[in-house]
Length: 229
Image (cartoon, rainbow, N blue to C red):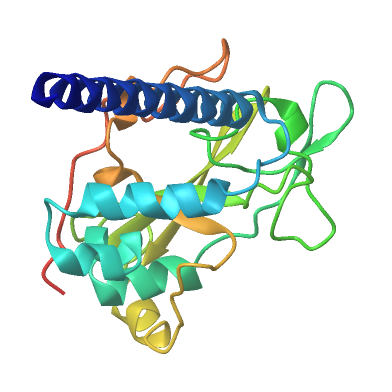
């Protein structure tokens, strides 16, 4: 009788293991579909935003907790420069693509096809529910460069439009601009989204379509000046 009970117990454990394996395979298939939908630019699937937030929390775990609670620009540059970065940000204007369709600047990690970069009417998203995005880089300039003695900082904004490649917009700022931007709000949900290249994981290793090679690849110096703010 005892042997029979052990056999039944072992069979139940084996069944549970098979169920767990099946669940893992189902989740793997679901994530594979999510990644495929993201890269190809089809309409954002349900739950995508929640998945991104969960992934960001997991990625933040090994680092300073404060990084997870503040805007990425603050983590990269500190509050004063992050506010100036938002204050000086150019409009995320659309350009006409090869097929005559307007294309807005988007996040190349999630949209690499013209179909997901068509701007919607609200000026914040594309018709594929992608938020308009500008990638950023901040450099300190030596005194006396073109732009006047007060222009000590260079803010670079990179626009990525699938099939059109990259566009660069540069702003210069000094103490006056930093002071003028001191009251600027900086929210995670702002549009366009500002993504600092200095702290973008794996920035030099992303694959992009032919003709869309980032001109900043291997040229951006990592910076974590704001992590302690």
